[in-house]
Image 1 (cartoon, rainbow, N blue to C red):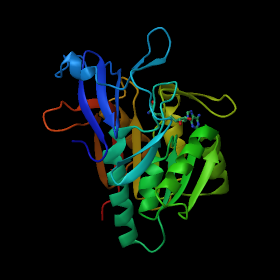
Image 2 (cartoon, helix red, strand yellow; image 1 turned 120 degrees about the vertical axis):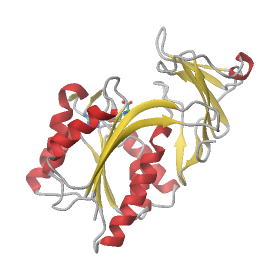
Image 3 (cartoon, rainbow, N blue to C red; image 1 turned 180 degrees about the vertical axis):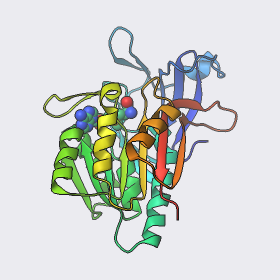
Image 4 (spheres, helix red, strand yellow; image 1 turned 135 degrees about the horizontal axis):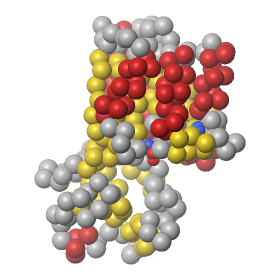
Length: 286
Ligand SMILES: C[S@@+](CC[C@H](N)C(=O)[O-])C[C@H]1O[C@@H](n2cnc3c(N)ncnc32)[C@H](O)[C@@H]1O
């Protein structure tokens, strides 16, 4: 089993079958080039099937709840099936959430003031929840007001509404340039840039063109003795070492621990883990 209410049940034939609490979904996964292990009858138990061919659409075998709550890594998330096939969670990030929480706790034990963590392209707030649950002060930035509201609701759902979180609806580059001008600094930065995205005023973000600028702007707002930087991406071609090289070059020569790997969707024993994006991270060692 994966941790909590999420499990990958099977993958293959370009699809993935996943359980999110009471809901089972069948969605595209181009990387699953192998054959499914479960029978077609078991796949047919999915409550809904999402397809991108002929336009994005859901086909429902049973009506889905308008929204529902699941728990992963001790964090609660409200889910809802969006028109893009997303649900408001990327469960392949769960190892990173565990790591963020452990690192923030380690930093707290070592230092006197709370860790200041910046979460960029923050989506529904998984990293914000993980950091806030370990008492970091978080700045949460996303271009979409709707996603920021969703993340805020997730924070309240976890009983963390009194945590110190700044909510910012802005283009990431505009935000970082302003923070640099104001001399604001962060001990920890987490970023999950999209392959392609838009800021609130239509600013176009293309990861291949913009990633190095984003990372250099991040470096400019890092505090003098930071704790961690975590970069994740789902863009095909941006492998773990591609992310690590980009991060190393932007952060400059830095003592500490460098690691990289693939994000994985996981199920119970015997279910092939399904790679879904890459991560690279740096953390301070003492
Ligand atoms: C979590 S990231 C990408 C998720 C995943 N890595 C992927 O590629 O599907 C997507 C988030 O970035 C936000 N976003 C996209 N472009 C942005 C920009 N220029 N500035 C701030 N946030 C942006 C979106 O609103 C969305 O919530």
